[in-house]
Length: 106
Image (cartoon, rainbow, N blue to C red; front, side, top):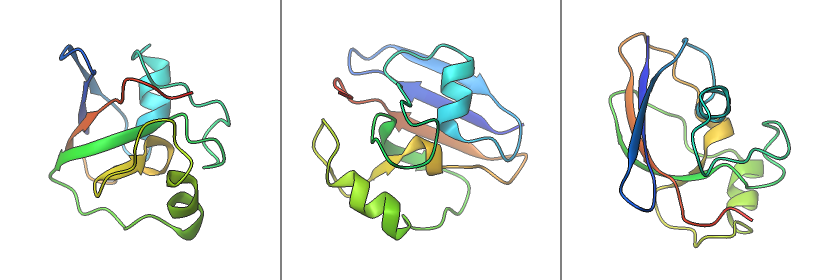
């Protein structure tokens, strides 16, 4: 199972093992990870699942045009490693990702 570590702004962490082909947003919501809102349900139209990608063992595609556009409107500043967790979908059983959850989503 892929593993994702969600690091909150206060430094607390939550590690979640998740099924392959599940988005980091869905895994966060299903495990009550604080700070991930996901208002639009994963369609990359709200920006409330913004994360900062720290580490991954899986090759991920760059942001799509829609994701790239939405990252300009997130509540917390966009950085080089900003992503929408609804668009991060591990495809390898051995995937390991670390993401930082911003202090503010809305």
